[in-house]
Length: 102
Image (cartoon, rainbow, N blue to C red; front, side):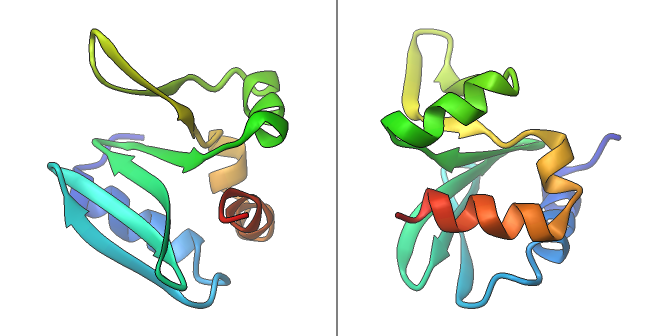
């Protein structure tokens, strides 16, 4: 599925409709996601990345997710791709969102 960033942002927001207190702001050519004013996600191009910690990162790696890499030489190792099967399931996406904001 191919989207422009604006279309994909709207798709993600629709999928996250069960998450209360969500706010999105434009940043660095993409979008930053906040839950109750706490930054937890990056939308860059057509990929959503959630903030992880040592415990939650294991689940992302198990799904084959890769860290956010804004440039070839730079990786933000605490932000990982949200698997498409999670994005496509609003209930599961809500659970992963809550874990990303801990």
